[in-house]
Length: 505
Ligand code: TYD
Ligand code: MG
Image 1: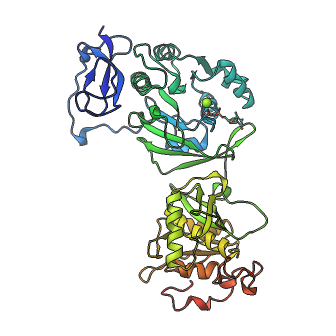
Image 2: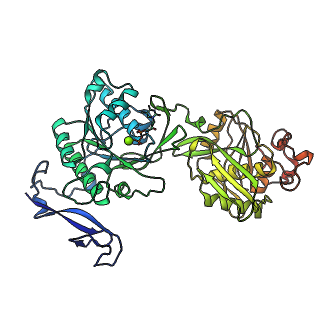
Image 3: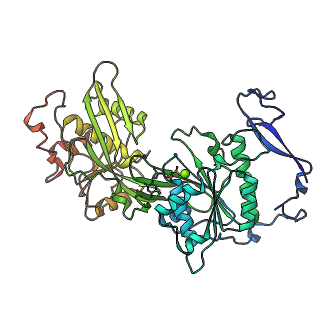
């Protein structure tokens, strides 16, 4: 048996040190030493539980001679999760499920465990749920809430409160489950390392052990990792390149909607998202996610514009909200939630210089409804329209949807998947779409929705919000009142639009 020792390995140059030091003596990098288990002796003749046959000869093969390996999939029974995984879990693979504390990772996995135990045919699989985070009693409480305490399903899920990775591997080898869930990887430790639970060294070493076991025994492993919004918990982040798939459960803890995204998937696409709602009894799959992020307020106030975005291959309609208020002393505020603040600042500048919507002395707040967080440049246009609408205190028609990227010159740029976005908008009852257009390309025509192609931001604002003095300038001008919403788009083409390169279609 090879002896195991721990060394401090520099993550930059790979030099090994006996003791932790702040600076690597070899390359001079700071704070790069991570405690790691090294196996002294001949690595290739490693023995012990689970070590593969030592002399298995591996010879290179031509690409054409490789056997087809369409991975087997074990559906978790949670449709949205299977969608994101690409059909289900693959035996022998490792999946990292990240997300902020309290977002619903344990809930999702307990529901997936139930689905796995139930199985698709008549035989479900065994699931081992190792929890280092909660006691078995706490898991039972949650299972009770999810109504999973009785029946065959409950018999097939075993729960163990265990922190030691060696013990978890042992238990898995005894129980032979199809899936092992480790909640969370930050609580699992090995006594071969001195570092505390959750340190980079511990997290990596434990994850590697579990993955090694997964590969050898054909068990699918799901590791839970707590990650904060700014990614400040480094441990799980360092696992991303080790595991086969990385899923993130996102959302605003105070809101109920949750998005499940894959940022990496060796067995499927990273394009899919799953949409859930946190309900009284667990996460419920949202059947019509296209509508989920539209606010449902009856009143349609200025500053709200629907945008059509694409989450992977899935079109979503989101409500972009903006509030513009005269600023006080000092530099004006630019606050955004769900949208990049720098992007907001940039768009405010473009609006001022290129579209005659001066917000330089105003405080600006922007928000995506439903706690959604998106980096889709296609939301630039709805955000700009919402800002202009709020400043001018004129609502944008409710049946209007906007999509388009805004450039520094105030020009509108096309976005991918425009037709798919517009079809979804039409399905959800939107009647007018303001989209980027140029002389060269025609916008798609979609039945049920009038597609208005505009070349630049100024034109888009003229059409959707209507021209008019700003809130600060002349608030009481009759044609600028909130009762006269921008009729420009409804009825005949706006005369002010001029001989634009593209008209309405
Ligand atoms: P949890 O799965 O424990 O989060 P994580 O494992 O990511 O830390 O979920 C925690 C929150 O979910 C908690 O605030 C309560 C809420 N919740 C529900 O609203 N409904 C439910 O059925 C369950 C089980 C939890
Ligand atoms: Mg949890």
